[in-house]
Length: 396
Image (tube, rainbow, N blue to C red; front, side):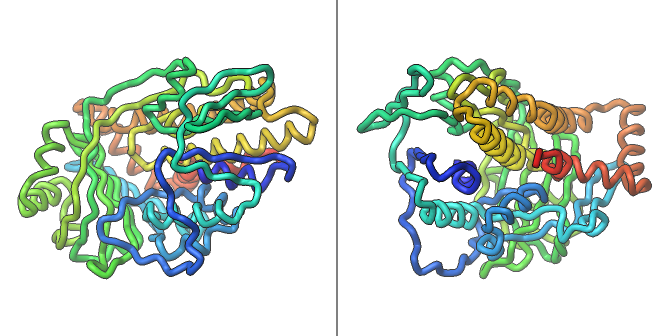
């Protein structure tokens, strides 16, 4: 929501006002602008190269740098098989394939930028209790007042109550798996390398984090397990947990030196079958909540936000209101291919690597090895995965 509000403020005419409604209380502006210090247990988000490009365009990148860890390489492998591939940012001519940012750093950077936007009103803590069409506008009911909006953007998460209230149809596919997340400290420096390892229970990802005062070699873990295994590992003794992790991942980073707070949550694919209506757009996890493999959810949502902003700006130049059905339908068409490809990859990859068929296993191993052997194929794969193919197709 903050990212979309900043994009709209940057690119839409000054006559338009933007209101952001957030149920939780947000901190007041920090006028001292003290430096961000990484915390061992802070949650984090993977930012693709396309997301970094958008934040650079907004002038936010310098403020984010203290909470960033670059992903220079990604090592992809399958436990117990020969196939593997190493993807590199240098091969693309990029300074990194992506970055991992701690959520407190990202949140406070976006919030500070929002406080500096004169046409952006933050309503927090507040919430939308109801919304309904009213002529060409939407009537939006807040706690203490009702406002009229040319366009209502629903971005309140995978379990969006507003999306359901307005009757947007959704489909949900439960994976019967859970993601266990935690921050870890290892013996060895990952050197900017992220790991995606496909195991019998699902993908295991380790992403580099910026060093903190408590540990130098920190990694963010996202480990796909059965619900029972995830629950057991969430409360397991640290030594038991570490042995189980090393058994799945190996000793590439040496021993586990520290294990942070562990949490698990059930995995599902949730899609809004209808994302636009007259005066209304469903965005972010409310539009598509994905399997965490490859960390695509946030980055896909930000590409949606960038394209929505572009479509609205183009419509306004043509004299068309932001909530116009044709403008929003054009946005939906432009995003259809990128969304479908990203959702298909995040949905299909975990299942593909879990099928125990000898011929399919050989094919998967050869595919991973093929990525390593053929640079052109590898570069094209990285361009798609990083979102740059979709971002570079923006109309100028």
